[in-house]
Length: 111
Image 1 (cartoon, rainbow, N blue to C red):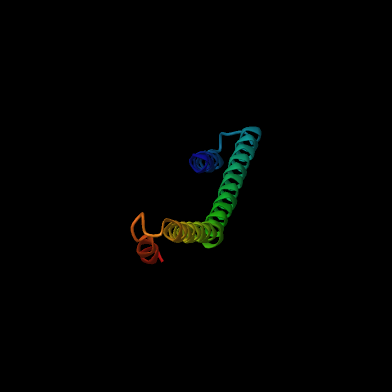
Image 2 (tube, rainbow, N blue to C red):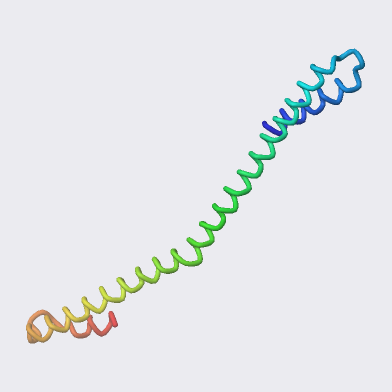
């Protein structure tokens, strides 16, 4: 939208410069307006570019560093929970002396 406004103002300035009946004050006002709109457009484009660069940096950081660390932590939790289940099954197997079936086989299958 700012680009469209800047282009329209530039076009109006170009036509005004060609129009010999336009006064110097009006021409100067149009030129100042065109310069202001162009500066706003350039600033908005620069701000957008900076924001996009920062967003891309954050996204790369997330997928290269943070997400793998989260997945690794989840994998570690899963491994420890299986180890805990195996340990509990082995203790139950030992304590039950076969009354609960062969829990050692279940533990072996989990490992």
